[in-house]
Length: 391
Image (cartoon, rainbow, N blue to C red; front, side, top):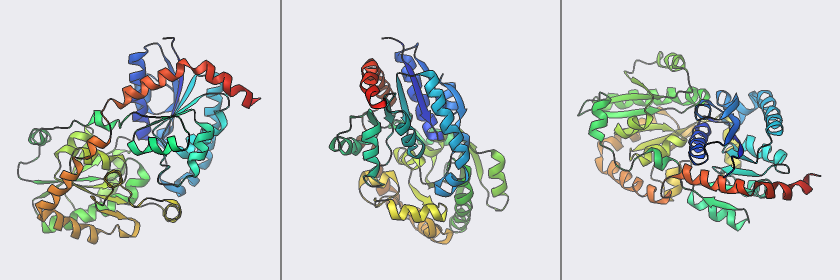
């Protein structure tokens, strides 16, 4: 197989991680592939030539996007220039639809576009799928129901499975993990996981800490573990923690071992909630955005739940505390009742056990890499077909 030139675009820390796994598989299958793009440290470490670390400036919600607008605009046009100079055989867009769909509109008439990790078209109504049909050559999806939606719309699509299945083993020795992390045998280990972005941590962590303080008053044997993101400076957490007297242990790195060791967790909405569910760790979901983002979301979002576990299982398995419902007293009261009734925890774990079968058979990054490399074989033909539309 000739060595293809592939340009990857990831704007968020999670996209950077998925891009890194994809890049490693591409290199394993096609060692001399020329990989360049926009991403972060994970992709760079995987051998992608990164011209800018976009993950340092990831935004949470509409308000943050406005604040960073001119920075994003500069990077957007710089990305277009890098693509023109590199002249890749295919461009891979990873998640981040606000940036990537706009990019697809600009480049699709010159270069074939493959989209890995679909925008949440099922949540935001049907408008985006029309844009995708016009601008994306092929979708590589990680959720089973997305393929049906795209096929109905006439979009070329392949379901590759969810990458998390390869990162989180089906069976873990919880007692061994707890011992390795220094947890006491009889303690009730509760995780505090406020997200991977500074804006997210700033909005959600104070509520989580106060909820934890109220829980500990009722359940003294509870111990708390704060999962720090590598994308947020340690000092930022210290500033927030200085305002509480809660005793809490800070944990950075080995995120999945921490998740699998916990008895319960409070988790900010995002990928971590699905990771916890695959670890079969009971949790509550918390989310708070800027009011402009929340109001816009209420107007546009078409799904009954925010958490992926609830969406996949098609029922309310995980309690969700969103925006004005995210009150420490309410969260703590519900959590105390949950922790004092083991049957509730067991029922949640049983529901979580169904998720793995819904998300594919594993090896998602390898399947995505093979699908992408197969697609690049037809890249010259794809470009010839696109050229008339550009003239």
